Image 1: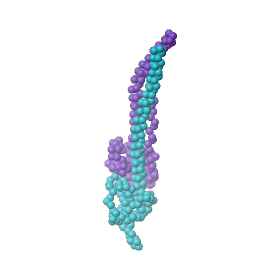
Image 2: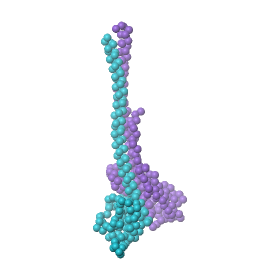
Image 3: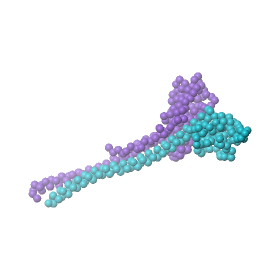
Image 4: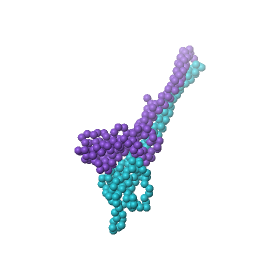
Length: 159
Length: 189
């Protein structure tokens, strides 16, 4: 009787150990999988975010460069510059500084171009001053050379 | 219990004991191996994905370098009164060889895009775009690389600039080239 009972218990034990062994394998895989998913998930999120930020930066630089290059070929006056700006950037406006004879177009504190003009013209009827005779465009900010010029708000005339 | 049955149970017990001992041994031997193997595979697959992500980030960095040089070249060519091929070649050479200016330009874009300085230093150490951005120079046509999947051209006739096509730069869409795929599921084989 004892032998019968012991052999049955031993059989059950053997089956249990076999099941445990199988489950243990699954457990190790599951732990490794969780670790893999957590770590690669973080990498994916962080890297995608960085790629996205830089892609946006490239697009902004691209559009600002395109404005500068286009203006160098086609613009003579601040009015024409304003028209070109509104065509390429409908929601952003540049601003003139009559005393400095410049027009600044900015997409951010460190992302802007400055167009320099040779003379100030005044409409005899309205007395509104504007800039003419484009001399050149400074893309120093795009090249990482300078910070944004000091505020010119006192003399800014919106086009 | 009759002796025959008794004998069968004895055999069963003996077999059970052997199986139990064998399973116990297998369990202890494989316990470490499975755990280590699964962990090793997870680490390998994680590292492979990180490498893929870092390679793409660095490729983007190098592409920004080419993009910046190409725009600078276009702008200077448009701005300069000297439209000769010789002046163009010198301009290109000057832009490519001025590593400090290239660095400033790339770093500026990354800084304004909000990328941490630590990451910028890492990319910088990995290096900028290698080789010349002049891809082809045949029959008066110079093809210039302007980033991954981007090229522009300048056409010269009798040593003078005849035309240029930088439309690829104006339309350049970086998101098409720099988008990371999600990690593949963990594989345990």
